[in-house]
Image 1: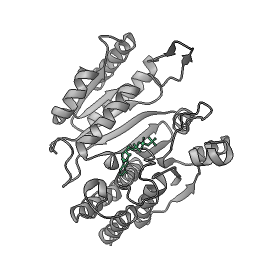
Image 2: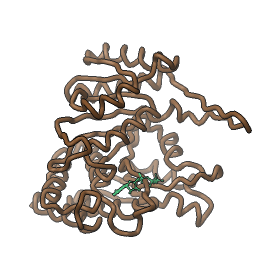
Image 3: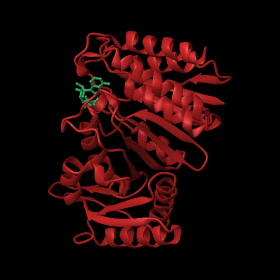
Amino acid sequence: MKIAVVEGDGIGKEVIPAAIDVLDALALPLEKVPVELGYGKWERTGYAITDDDLETLKECDCILFGAITTPSDPAYKSVLLTIRKELDMYANIRPIKPIHGIMGVTGRNDFNLVIVRENTEGMYSGIEEIHEDVAYTKRVITRKGSARIADYACKLAKSRQHRLEIVHKSNVLKSDRLFLDVCRETASSHHVEYHDTLVDSMAYNLIVHPNRYDVIVTTNLFGDILSDMAAALVGGLGLVPSANIGKEHAFFEPVHGSAPDIAGKGIANPIAAILSMKMMLEWYELTEQAKVVQDAIEYTMNKKMVTSDLGGKATTKEVGEAIADRVRQLIG
Ligand code: ATP
């Protein structure tokens, strides 16, 4: 097991060390390769990510990633988009599952869903033109891209409750007619029960009826927006992990960004980063260890050892150490 560890910028430098404390507590035989990427590196060297960095990332099985600040400077090359493209990480997976004892904005915890977002095309195709009075972004949907994300979502649904919700805007966007057709064909071939919803209706239903859904598959921008919205269901951005999966590599990161407003204060919630590390363990099929991490998180949160976003007084480091201690107790 060879893992690239990218702390990145802002609170990434605080939440990733906490996740590493918990990973270390599992005492697994693994190699960690620290890689510096991001805005801080760009300010210092003029490069946010170099070809050598990409080579190092490719030599590792996967990446545990904090967060990166993306400035609006057009000269800045987006690190996340570069990595997703170079390592062809086509599926972005965001589980939306309540943590025992923590309530989100709706005050309910009777749901357990996963958002599967296509990660390489759609509105983030990068094909854009900006003129003085008009700007264009080309929304690219391909049969191949739609089929592989639908295939991933169907396989995931088969390992869960066999239900797939296809989210689109095919009444307006021709590109989404292709996405919807391909998703339907793929779901039929997998014998997965499916249903489809327009994205605007989904935005409402996700908040009002989150318990209706099992696996949601959608295009890049819709998935980006819906998954941040869904974070509110479980208690905020500090709690939601994600995985970017490709054929050969994977990349695990909290859904939140670098949060410059709280960076350096030691108050960032490390749970999203620790849960991202847990998704990494699942990717390695270390199911028992992943369960130990989940149990340790719930135990620690039930003891009210939580950061200020959840009404507690603990620091990022204290939460990480408490979870790591519990992991050591559980594995004896
Ligand atoms: P970026 O520009 O890197 O996306 P951002 O501040 O615009 O950063 P987020 O980092 O996603 O976006 O944060 C939005 C807000 O949510 C932050 O201002 C912060 O108050 C809160 N937040 C995000 N992550 C956490 C966390 N782990 N713990 C506590 N609060 C958080």
